[in-house]
Length: 117
Image (cartoon, rainbow, N blue to C red):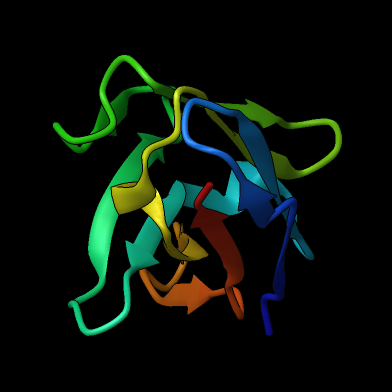
């Protein structure tokens, strides 16, 4: 069983920054892709960013230039640096990981990000 634990959410004013982290219970070396989705109230879950095992990273158009994903293989964590936050970024952010061995997807419980003045 793979566990993903997110941290770093909270309340921030428009234009502010937050850094989310996701810690995995297994080595990142066993993960084919990992990233973040978000779900705003009343909306479907949407992809924010994904990073492959080779380090190829893609971003949703809505966050390009503002969000940056990174990973620390030694600590088995991935992070999401979010700058210039906007009210429309308000959502629950979920970390996910897909295993190389089984191609199963695992999800964290989510962390709430609220952008409001």
